[in-house]
Amino acid sequence: MIGVFDSGVGGLTVLQALRKRLPQREFLYVGDTARAPYGRKPAAMVAGFACEIADYLCGRGVEAIVVACNTASAVALPELERRCKVPVWGVVDAGVEAATRMTRTGHIGVIATRATIASAAYQRRLEARGLRVWARECPMLVHLVEEGLAESEEADVLSRHYLSGRPEIDTLILGCTHYPLLRASLQRAAGGHVRLVDSASVTAERVAAAMTDEGNGRVTYYATGDTKAFAHTARMMGEGHAVHAIELRDAA
Image 1 (cartoon, rainbow, N blue to C red):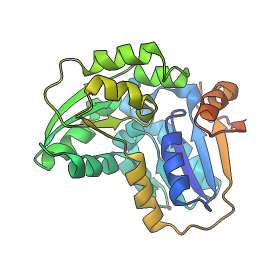
Image 2: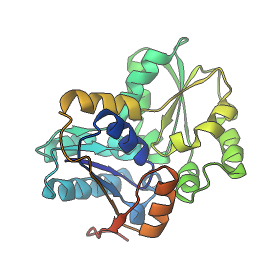
Image 3: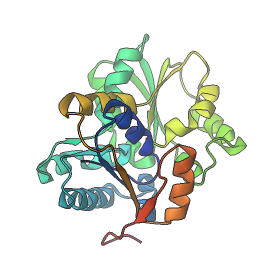
Image 4: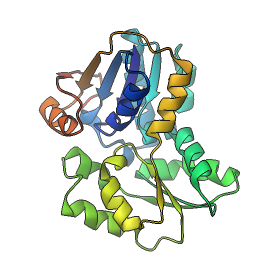
């Protein structure tokens, strides 16, 4: 069984990519909706949340953990790797790798939550490869997805707002696992010549290369907050047909 977690439904984009690569594997997904969004919270607090969820997953007997959240990957991955006795994968390195392969000009944009941008996790890795980086925090985009408004007029308006004033780029990293659900709006705002990078597929490739595809193919979904709201948005993605409530120590 592989554990996957995010602050909400965004990590389901990673889960879907994993299930395509490992269809026989059993997965346990945790959406920490009671404490979402992570992107507006202090790094130390997010790291604490991530460690708590990882402890829960390890207690359930998972063989590996995928941190399907850019914010948690950016601020907590080293601690999770030290803490857990099972392999732990994040999504930031996968996004950097994909963007590096994809860019033609070496000019890359990154949009992400406030905490991810503040951590400079993407900027440092990309600049170390000699790439030029433009980065912007987009604090309201996660809210749109969690509220089921990914295909709304508001999504178009906010996408245009956040991508306004950018320099010339040819590649844009969607540095939050919620953002692929806004791909249509973001592509319109960025322009057809800009390639959008979703780290989900590269992350799934890495996990599939290390894990055998065996099991019962079952997926169990948990949410720390409103299970009905989670299930509604998840069903729009073809996931989360039955969502169970889970209480974590500091959930509020």
